[in-house]
Image 1 (tube, rainbow, N blue to C red):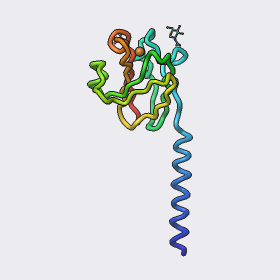
Image 2: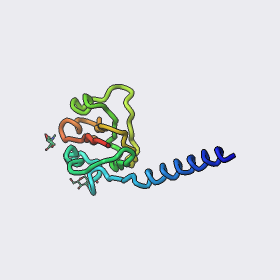
Image 3: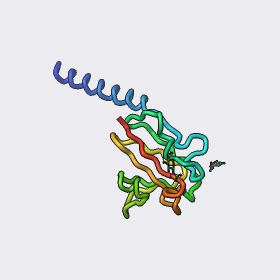
Image 4: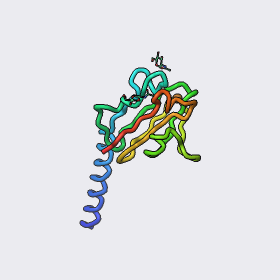
Length: 123
Ligand SMILES: *[C@@H]1O[C@H](CO)[C@@H](O)[C@H](O)[C@H]1NC(C)=O
Ligand SMILES: *[C@@H]1O[C@H](CO)[C@@H](O)[C@H](O)[C@H]1NC(C)=O
Ligand SMILES: [Cu+2]
């Protein structure tokens, strides 16, 4: 019985801990007031910010654009492999994974010509 209570207490603490972790998650509007926007070079947007795993990036844009999750090679080459996860809603909330996260727009040549891409490292 006492052991059962101990486990229950542990579970409660675990749940509380995860909830407080979630509460710590910050939300960032990518590109600030202009949003995810090909008229602005997006690559410098992450500069000076520090991101944590689980923080939310909000990509707000006209649906002419998109957000594609790529790896470092995709980021550098501005190419997304077939089957890459692609967001198109114009208001996408994406939680950061631990480590490097890369996002590009694959519409037209926005990525290569306009710098419509970001690399974000989450600790
Ligand atoms: C994109 O950025 C420009 C400024 O460079 C701004 O005028 C325009 O409203 C932005 N577009 C959207 C959809 O917010
Ligand atoms: C965007 O800005 C970065 C950093 O200043 C620069 O290296 C890059 O060439 C720019 N990209 C474009 C397409 O202008
Ligand atoms: Cu674009």
